[in-house]
Length: 98
Image (cartoon, rainbow, N blue to C red; front, side, top):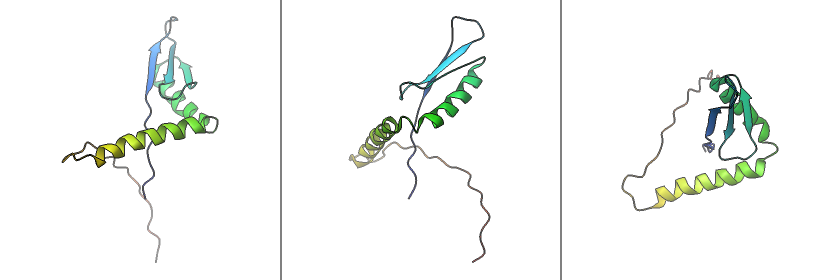
């Protein structure tokens, strides 16, 4: 069985101080970052989101349940071609000898 994916988005903008960027995770309140470049803010947001999973577990699970319900309701409709995203990951492992 595949592990469900939680989709999050972030907003990043330059602050009033030149060269300082701030960002937040849009779906989970309280996850912020600040750095000297948008890419550094993004990296910090990813790290902060992983850290905050422990403290905001109820928020993460509620959002995951909502997203899964939305995705599966699209598949349950009588739509001949439901929309879906195909995600392919590289998972290279050594085969174990039988």
